[in-house]
Picture 1 (tube, rainbow, N blue to C red):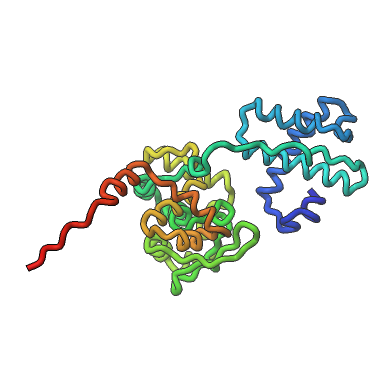
Picture 2: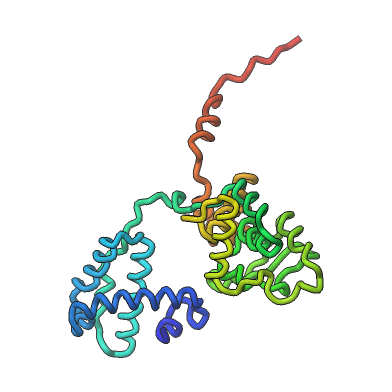
Length: 282
């Protein structure tokens, strides 16, 4: 972890979530490597690393999870080379797992009706959680890290530091502004939502989904952010506006949410190309 925080892309700002992911990946890789013998780890043969990735595939893990575990193993060998223990880099020649699933199919989002149902069973604090995700598009770390000092109700904005340590100003929707305004001025100190642990936030949203009869699986907390992009794009049809609100570094990321529904395509083509009606002249 020292090498990762010293030479990794995030440096000392590497998030706790990322560090936990690397630790988990290291545990799995070392367990696999040590089962092959103590010396296997320092060999230059790629059989170890390729075999490891193939074992992950046989477990039915997603390509994203497999590539994350691959990154952990790569970080380990980078640290070993830095320490002078080996010159081997067997992970460099191992292929990344190919993901053949359409990108949009992974973007499970809560529907407009789902959001309304969740708000209907939520208390004020829970409503803030839902709206911060579904209207402001906050990620988990941003949700639990948001404090009232970052919120400016006069300007109807808030400032967050998110992915890549990038700070951005987010404009408040009418619904989110109303929910924040209902909190009395004397209570506008400290964290905006009372839960400071990601696991607790997941449990809160899962409970709300259960009460509202809304599916939580394949959506979870991040599904609220996907809802924000999907619904805003549906209402505005402006990719650039949505990209800015979602703080996407590239519009190509926003295009994932622009999946064309077959019924919308059918409707659009039903009358496309018809001759214009003849103009009646007096």
